[in-house]
Length: 114
Length: 110
Image (cartoon, rainbow over all chains, first blue to last red; front, side, top):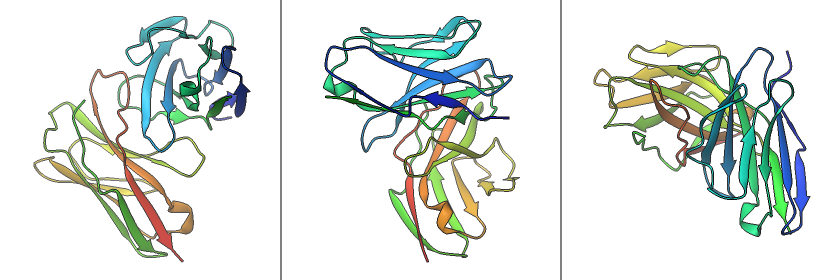
């Protein structure tokens, strides 16, 4: 059973371009979470999705960021018109349920905006 | 999110036990205590979680104070592979996410 798969592992974008980060949850998991980790800081929650539905996006910046988890295929975190401050590691996690089950994290995508 | 307080850093000698403390004096009755760790350049990894009773698994033990205002993660024999940042997190029943603080950076000395 493969773990949570994120790709790409590293992504370089110029200011103003779009970044698309993909996350395939563990088999059988329908709950997906995205977190962002700025350099030398802890992880900050961004969004929680459950197959085709956004359940909680309280941590998402109001503009330029969006997330989806379609019925088929991976979850996508999309950042439009990237700026230098978006440079960070973005981690995806999945779980079987929401309540007190362990969350399995991917290796992350390290986004660098130049 | 209820707050936790952890030491910024700790050191341990290899093959010795390590006790990582966490204070959570504002914990509520529906808060579970979770521990995750993050190795360098990796995503976080689940370690253990509990509510009131002490818990053991293959990775570690979790000792929870009777009043639940503190807990201790115990690694029975530290290895070099255990060098990581350890996060103590309170997760309320019904909450949608984990709140990561700054954690404790554990250094294991060979």
